[in-house]
Length: 373
Image 1 (cartoon, rainbow, N blue to C red):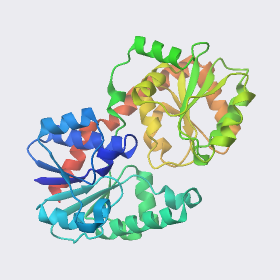
Image 2: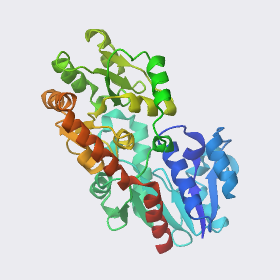
Image 3: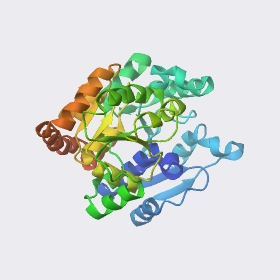
Image 4: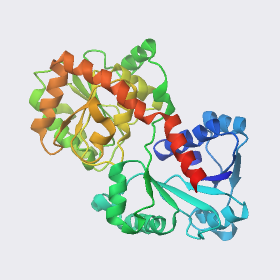
């Protein structure tokens, strides 16, 4: 087969969808070198040594496609013609879209949809962005031969908001950054704790952008209730969002027991997980919830929310609380903090649950779909 990937995110996004795209592309090329791979892009890619080295070793072809006056917008309108011109067997849109000049029949089309949060929480998006995202997903729902949803929650949202997609959706989970697969390095953890000056007490780790949907407000309310009953501090990691001012204004209200580290590099993040006592992820809604898998990969117990995709992803590795109840969040944090048997059992289950997201299994699921189409 000749397989083409929408690799724009892989080459130009350092986190999030970029990590997903790079991990999936390299995994597919490693497990199935018998195919020919074409990576479609616009512009000059970032210097991503690991990814670029993997591509060189695989023999995959990077192709900068900017037809005519469209330039970087050829990804939205132009790659359909390019796919036909390059005689692809399969085109895989890895991040929620299919070129608008797509013509059914000539090339099999697959698109991965990660979430529909712009429909669930429209108030968190600019009106123009919502309109663009809606048009792109609606087009995918009508034209794609197959849609891959990264969770059953996202599949249900697709069928609800875009009913024309029914019957053409498969759920294929995703993995997190490859760095979370590496073994724990005790000396590296010690250096990180000193780097961020969190050596005085054990800590609970919460990894989330400071957005209202991530629910830091309730988390801080819960933490304040049990602050004097547990030994751990609370450490927040994540960039600024629409709740940043509200959350950061409270840093001084916790007697030095609350820290915000901002956005950190992936290597540091892995070591911060390893150094934590356990993790908490109180988000209201997610399409997948990458921090849950990151935590499980590092063998950590989790407190997270009921509903959405959370039970689907974390399974038995977490204690669950109503996202709108600071009392429930506090109760579950207190349980893990004070019950060593509960914590140890959740840590054991975390390693078991994480096996469901083995990248080899996920790649083979998608390869089977390629072959079927």
